[in-house]
Length: 261
Image 1 (cartoon, rainbow, N blue to C red):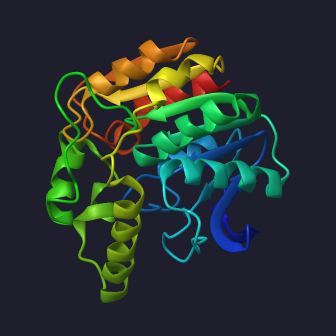
Image 2 (tube, rainbow, N blue to C red):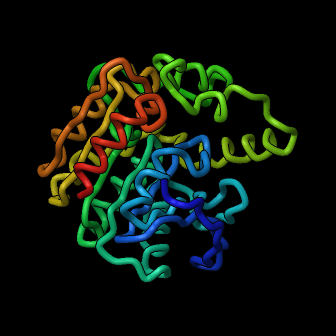
């Protein structure tokens, strides 16, 4: 396994952003979901054996500052294109999980030429034609956690992520992260009505990964992303929920590594 990452900081548009950096090779930017940055997990370590992985905490999350103008997911996408510019990164591989996948998709429609490859993992951003995206803001964080996995017993890192209690400091950060997610995703809830129509301009090789039993963002959304992205492959993981990078770790790592190479 690659060595543990360094914790670094960069200023983008006057806002200080914390990020983890590890590995070596071509750049790979990994964008986290609505809950916050989960830290350096096994899939990060595996990817860092071949790539230089950048895993930032979004503006308004954890200790990262949010510029006053940043109010929407498209704003966040603009911010991360600026982030790439400040970091001097070109033709990056980009992966986003859940809300991070939505950000990645918005980046792709704005500036496809900045990307080498695109990976969307159970991404929000498209309103499903069948079913609906669960409103995670109307239920408790504990209820959201229960929906993340189809079978938590097959997730090696479940205990470290969700099996222990939070400290008062961790709870405060989680509440602040949730407030930021509400600001970004509330209206319209968890989707951009124009996104599916604009994905047709993204000719970057794209991989759409989804858990068949995702109880938060239905697999129909993955099918719609695949239908909208002209150069995409859809990989549906059976017996898997919203976090395939955690629940089906080994299958996920193999699938993503083969695609990124």
